[in-house]
Image (tube, rainbow, N blue to C red):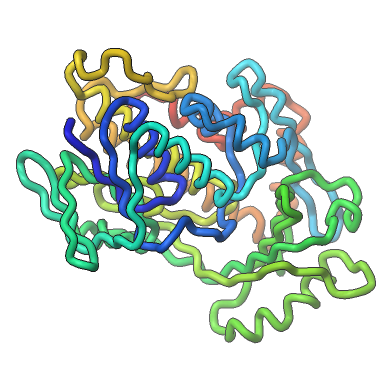
Length: 399
């Protein structure tokens, strides 16, 4: 294989590029921005993702920058803890029976450094605008008129993917009625709400929320009405945070942002010599932390399919794929892997994340509370639940 092009230097694009570069394939990453994105965005890494990052030899550096979360909690806004789930029940399934909390902006520089060590390149300020496949490869033309040629192109350029639009691939789904407001705070929320865990999902039919600890502080996710001005919602954020826990003054907020949330899946993940991965292929709400994780899985599995499709002589002496124990990789074509990743987006990622949203905002959540208490009291049931919600089972089920 002469060269693979990757559009997007986020965690998904850089993971795909590093997987290929470690396998001996020349890689060029085309990034629209002038540098790596600095926004925190996703911040939760699930066990199978940690296994993949370990296989790429970057996990130790990520864990040195992050924190380990072995438990997470479901809470009621007015009544306190409902159930705490211990990920230790996965000890027989993965070497990493925990989540790692770390902003994705701390992972991408690590991936970039390793990619360059393996001979890969990233070209900044190059937004892909058009894509043309031919029998022997693909040509990606950027906004500045530069043309890059490769055997394959992996589109990992986000939810507004220019690659997907250039190919005319439909991106169907829904937009959630409320916007999501995320605030990063320097408050020690553990002191304000004694007994909370590093990850907390808080039920309330009027105003559910999520509390996440990160290495730099805490993040609070709140639903926000769809039709109000952003400035008005940011202005009332201090009062909303004091309603979560009141330190006797306004919370110290480092950053806050509002965004619309969608649940969409591309009609196909392969067209010609182009593959879609991550948010370019599927987007979902952030409840459960599945977006970046499933995107990294896309990246590793699609890149591995490209590597295993090469002649054995070309693979000799190269790094093997970074796949978690028990992963079922379709035996055959890139088409089969792309189809399986789309199936996972439809049958695992979408129903899990959407179900989380429905439960948190349920008008009468009492039944959900009882289910969660029963789940936490039964280690076997907890294990089965976590195998699915951490996406381990999505990698093991045969295609």
